[in-house]
Image 1 (spheres, each protein chain N blue to C red):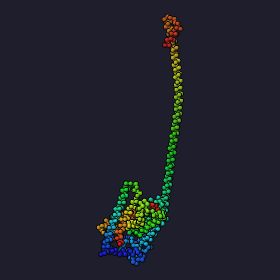
Image 2 (tube, chains in turn cyan, blue, red):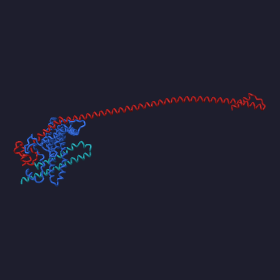
Image 3 (tube, rainbow over the protein chains, first blue to last red):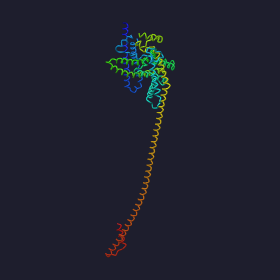
Length: 78
Length: 254
Length: 190
């Protein structure tokens, strides 16, 4: 019984951690969308900022990956 | 919990999305212990990455043509791309670290793409591998920072443009973010690669059910395409962040 | 259960070899990324791979590519210089051609002017000669006319005198010669 409850908690926690991936998707969308908005306003400056775009996407995505990792840890490692 | 899960799944859907990451000896029994010198699947796929890099950069450029051959022009494009990235992001005086950064970039790029081959083993999905890469960058950057700038390197944490009252708080934040760098640097790469491969395996498990198998196969194709992009972008991001950290070490003033 | 295995592995990977015994598959679905007994293996082979790549890159590949790129840059620069030289030559040739053309044109103009002057001179000389001849002829003709006119006046006065003398003789008068001459001359003037 005790183990079942613990397992239940693990699965619920993993599911909640999965929300983080969706939040990271929103973040990545913000980064890319704002970059596009800025790039359309000043296309000549956009080319030099693609590196910044990728760094921003990577930072936003990394946090989503962290939540995914927590879900995996709850499912398989704890 | 673990054994129970395995027992239950044998009936219906079979999900072992993480089994592809198991490190096992290449020769001999599956159950053999893995010591530090054992030739494992890690060895195999790292060796393949090394061979691919040698094939591209040594045998591909053997002609030294003024008009390049196809493989030579691929090598030249990668060289020019990385050189420009180091020069633009880290500055002119970081050029002497160019072979080091090129080594990291090429290893991660080739390991990522070789990991995408079916039945292959993604070495960069392992936190041990990415942690070593990230720690190597972290140690290099820290040592270079102190050797080049001495104690002035600590000015990186003392934000002189902020109000005096805020500076100790900012210093603590900067210090934490500095030491979190290798963690995020390694987990970003390893987690991305592992997540992509695990998701593909999960959809492959769905493909066993006839009703949703077309959906599963289409999804695997789409995710495979995404992973092709992610493999390149993650190698690029790892490298460009290395360049950014290197710039901090060479020019620590804010 | 998996937790215990992982912990044991993490704490003493080498010492717990006996306890681990079972491979990761048999131990259940723990995360292979956290199977600490494989870390030394991965790190060792990673370091080997990185060192090989580093030496291949820094000793062979990168100097070679840099050399090829520099050589290509040099070739392109040389070719551009050669093209520039050829272009300069073409420009020079065009200049020379234009200069020759201009010289020829001035020469032609000079010749035309000279010829024109010569012709003009000849023409003027011929004109002057012709004028002189014409004026000589005119003078001659005028002289002849005046002679003829003088002759005619003499003849007319002689005829008039004779006629007057004859008329006077027929009328029975003896003519005074001197008076007749005076009267005729007087009339002839009018």
